[in-house]
Length: 104
Image 1: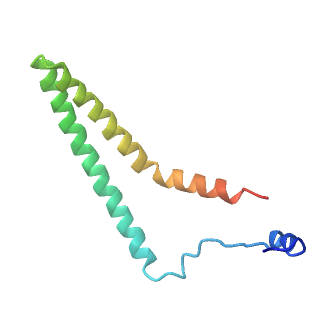
Image 2 (image 1 turned 90 degrees about the vertical axis):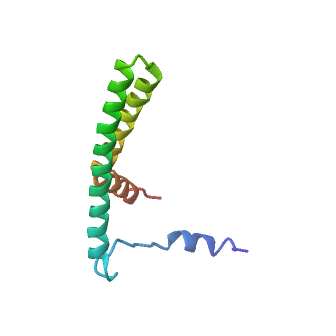
Image 3 (image 1 turned 180 degrees about the vertical axis):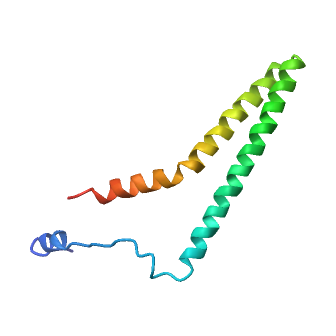
């Protein structure tokens, strides 16, 4: 059990840890690999966009509204995926800096 005399000292102890990019071997390789995964995801999002546009057109011209609707929702998902992939650096950095400003 933490005694009332020890508890304030635990709260006063400051921890100051920042990301260290030189301590982990292979971090540059991992960063390059993540860039490649992002490029692969963008290529897949583009392929899905083209496929969903074709699906939407076929559904529209064949009189199949459900097929056209699924193509439209697929277009939205592909665009959302590209938006998240493209903005991932901004999102991660924003929340990292937002988290580092939180104080007691």
